[in-house]
Length: 246
Image 1: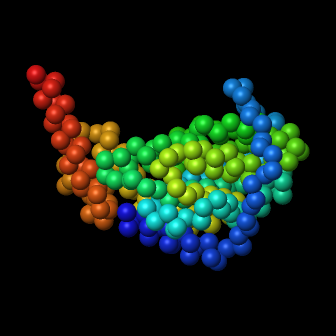
Image 2: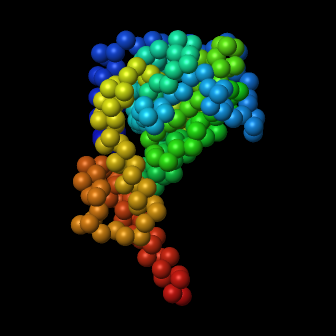
């Protein structure tokens, strides 16, 4: 979708003005934490994206596989070892080059890719429950920091999960820990994508298809394929209602 492609271009422009560090994947994988992997307040070595700071987690996709720097991991701001004892703003942008995305499957696939984060299991790393979409609040334990846990370990497991999905042909990850101002600017760039996903979410979960009262009507006008998704959802709703009456 051109709306997402524009967000990718604007994101590249945003990064061009930032001191970016390329991160190599760690030689050894980080061990899993298991079901009791909880980082309590007294154990926290670094906190990322606390609601008192700010956070953002975003997925951007492109059918142009080469538009994504496959295997690239970038950090804007200090890494974890430099920030022991601190609570920092946190941004995470995942870019994927995909094939086979269309109006029939795009919503389900976006949700599948977004939900990968809940499957990350790393000893000393905890993703806290979050009540809002497009946010991520993480804790890293003091013990994990002492053992050398870094952003590359988090990126490595996420990259592996992305590459295990057949329709993902290229993947890139960017972390930002620089400043709340940078996260705010990034949110402005990707907000149209957030609204697109919210519109798809509404289509998937609601039965009201009145465009005149919908807060995402402008998104449907801008994003090709969204009207087709709406029409398909309307048809399914009508079929379901007919079956119920029968």
